[in-house]
Length: 124
Image 1 (cartoon, rainbow, N blue to C red):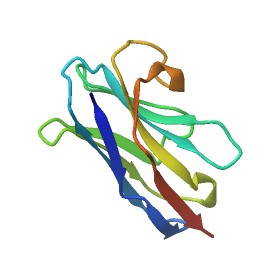
Image 2 (tube, one colour; image 1 turned 180 degrees about the vertical axis):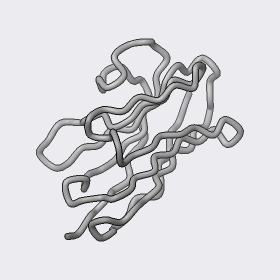
Image 3 (cartoon, rainbow, N blue to C red; image 1 turned 30 degrees about the horizontal axis):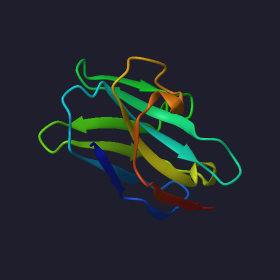
Image 4 (spheres, rainbow, N blue to C red; image 1 turned 120 degrees about the horizontal axis):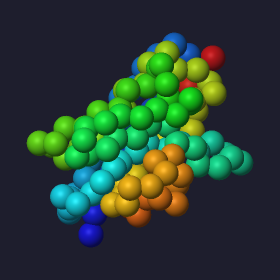
């Protein structure tokens, strides 16, 4: 059973940076892709960035393009999300997700495994 544990969230001022981490345990080498999603109160879960493990390809949604960077450390089995120039609109719970199917990478139902989330708060 794959388990995901996020960390690195917190409170920052607008313009600040955070790096989120997602530690993977019970890692199965047939995992196909991983991603970061976020969800603000009263909204749906939105895809931010995705990583295709085997091909080491990165993808960004319009939310994540330009200010966010996703990366994967195979030795540590950890997924990262570097977030720069944060603004109050980025405040949300951020979730790490992993899946085995090659499907729509920014559709939440594509993913089988989810972490509990890490909270990001941005003050103006």
